[in-house]
Length: 121
Picture (cartoon, helix red, strand yellow):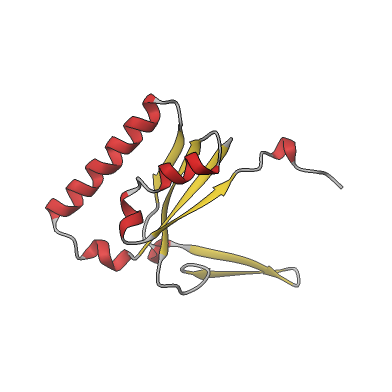
């Protein structure tokens, strides 16, 4: 079963980190990815560029509205994701707690619903 681990953090906190702290954190991410890859649990993942680069698209009454920035102002921003293979939610949670950003932000664990399993009307 696949799970998406959505990484939420405060972008401002990363800006306050020293080069050494950033390097150590990035090394933790590399080690985690390497471990998950060796267990064939890592499907994919990427960090996201800052929310200042985001564009939000909405359709209202058939009209497109495009705005700069994220959908909503929040204390934490979506900073990246891991797509992992896990036997169950408990195993996915165990992976999520190893993500460095879990110490200062939060990791949302969501099961993937493959398109082939969706019910069609």
